[in-house]
Image (tube, rainbow, N blue to C red; front, side):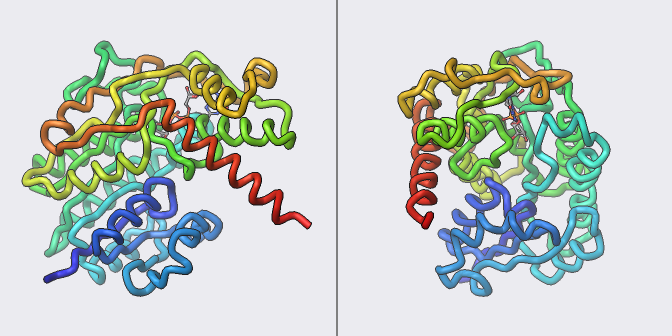
Length: 334
Ligand SMILES: C[C@H]1O[C@H](OP(=O)(O)OP(=O)(O)OC[C@H]2O[C@@H](n3cnc4c(=O)[nH]c(N)nc43)[C@H](O)[C@@H]2O)[C@@H](O)[C@@H](O)C1=O
């Protein structure tokens, strides 16, 4: 039996770590591209795999930045993956207003460069690009599906539109097996600390144990369709196992406000968020998407995939994790 080989860009991120775990459990050999500078970000992977004798047997990490075409081409030629999961990019929407150029460089051009390399390979891997609900920006219809017109309102959204359309174009014009996973927000205890959900659950835990008093945040009115990250990477894998390539909205189909998330997280540790919240203009954005909710029907029909975790379940998992890790670090203190 041949062992399937996958390559993941962005393997050190939240989704990358869950996807690596999933593929390794399925018996894949997994190669990951790692930025030379992201030594600390590797902590997620080290925590998962360091003691499990996986490195150099099933998991191989390679240094390569997304603008380093020759290195990526060399790695792809050497590793000959069957599947290429493209997760890397500047993923913070708020930051994209501060650094629009590098956001486009990595998120938009980085995807095009990868597609170009794949197009030239003799053995072309199946390709999955992690697109985003931000492509819809300010949509006319609700919920959004794969046919909803793209109307991005943030530099990040514009970059994702470019990458999404290029992925479609390489599928339709050059015959690549290329798919877009149009992901709505997906969270977990491994979510980066600057995204709103994790910022809230970490603060709720820290305030509950007396290590923090205030939580400074931006607007609470925005609504998001929040799902659970491990479920979304399962859908990504299913996309590349399907007979034909296509684009899929991955979402729960239900939206909640930031205030609802905040309220649920603080309630989970017996606190009232109103006693600790402080509005901070530094976290307000020049433009907000507010009507994003996805229709995951296509993924359900074609891939048999459905988001299972609701907001209450997600909040409970994240708060529990953050409380436990604070307690563990407190007990380690001399
Ligand atoms: C689908 C999409 O999902 C993510 O992008 P995002 O939705 O912008 O996620 P977020 O957690 O940064 O913000 C959610 C909402 O929360 C509001 N908000 C209020 N106060 C703070 C605050 O203090 N920090 C942050 N970060 N947000 C705040 C903020 O203004 C926004 O309305 C990325 O994975 C992205 O890569 C992606 O593709």
